[in-house]
Every structure is written in structure tokens, then in C-alpha cells.
Image 1 (tube, rainbow, N blue to C red):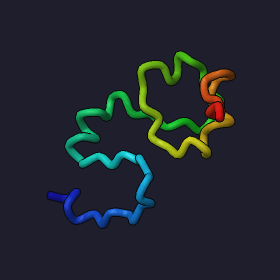
Image 2: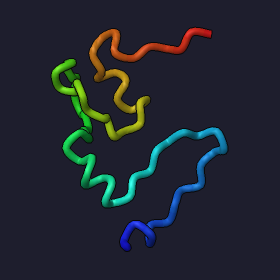
Image 3: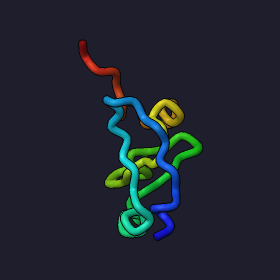
Length: 70
């Protein structure tokens, strides 16, 4: 299987990043999206943004993402 040949990135112990197999990516593919410009709620509703949050934060609609309350 091709996904078994992919070397997994070493992640920090508390990292919760999900890694999909090729089969999972194909099954979920219709809901995966990438954004490279400001997005509306309609652009991302019911979708999974397949990017680093810090890379796309400025393009998310106002109020879509917020800092956690400490």
C-alpha cells in the first residue's frame, strides 16, 4: 500500500494532528478543502479545512475562530 511507504513525521507527544491514509482521504475527499483567499461561511460550511490553522486564520470569516479562554 502506498500510504505505508510514506514516512510519518515525528510529532510532539500532545500533538492531535490527524493523518489520513490514501483510502480515508479518498472517502473524505469531498469534504476536504483548502483555502487561499478570504472565505465565507458558505465556502467552508460542513467541510474540513486541510491546512494548518495558523496559515489560514486570516482568511476565515469573522468569529469563525477564536483564542481559547484561559
